[in-house]
Amino acid sequence: MSRLQPDSPVASKVFPSPNHGERRDNRKPDMLVLHYTGMPTASEALQRLCNPVAEVSAHYFIFEDGRILQLVPEARRAWHAGVSCWAGEEDINSCSIGIEIANPGHEIALQPFPVEQIDATIALCKDIISRWPIKSQRILAHSDIAPGRKADPGELFPWRKLHREGIGHWVPPASNDHGHVFCRGDQGRPVEALQAMLAFYGYGIEIDGEFGEQTEAVVTAFQRHFRPAHIDGVADFSTITTLRNLINALH
Image 1: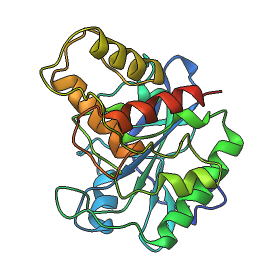
Image 2: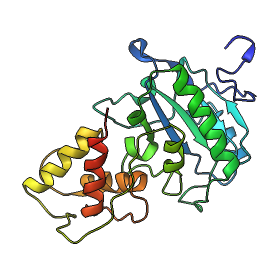
Image 3: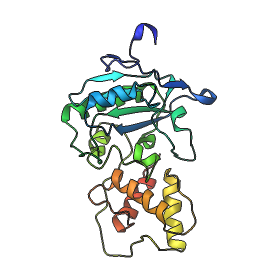
Image 4: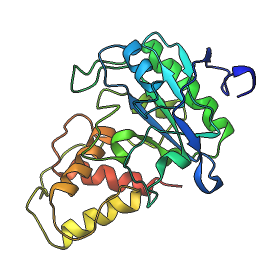
C-alpha cells in the first residue's frame, strides 16, 4: 500500500494492522464477508484487530458514524473468517474481502445499525464490487460461512436495503403457511432434499438425511440472513420456500 493510501476512495485513511499474509494460490477476491465487531466499543474492537497477539483482522472497519478505515490492503489475506466454508471453499480468507462493522453484537447487546453506518457500508461495498468480480450470491454474512459458530452481522442488519442498492442476493421472504415442518430429530428423504438445497446455495452442510445439530445451525444461519423475522432453526414453509426462491433467482 504505497504511501499508505487506501485502496478504496470511500475510506478516510489507513490504520494498518499487522495481521495479514499472502493470498494462497494467487487467489483474487471473489467474495465479500460482512461482520460485526462484537465488542463493547468501536475503539476496543479496532485495537484488537490491529493487535498482533490477537491474530485477527479485516480489510475495512466502519464506525457507527460512518467513518471507514482500511486495516489491510485488499491484495493481502486478512484474518477475518476463521474456520469457515462456502460452496466447497474452506480457505475463505484467501478469496474474500472482510468488512468489520462496529456493533456490540448478540453477546453484549445487538444494536440497530445507524443510518450513517449502513450508508457507508453500501458505499464501500459498491466500490469493492466495482473493482473485483464478486457475484451477488457471494456477498455474505459471517454467520453464513460459519453456521453455529458465528451470528454476525445478525438479524438487524438490513440486507434488503443493501439489495435495493445492488449489493447481495436477496428475495422477499415467503409468508408462512400450514404444512409440514422439519426440525431436530427428523430424518429421511425430505430432510436430505432440504440439505441438498442448502448445499447447492453454498452452505457447508453434510447431506445425510439427518436433521441434527449441524442442519439446525445452518437453517438458523439461513433464517438470520434471509428470513430474520423468526429465527428458530426449524425449516418451516417460509424458510424452505424462501430458499427455493433464492435458488431460482441465481444467475
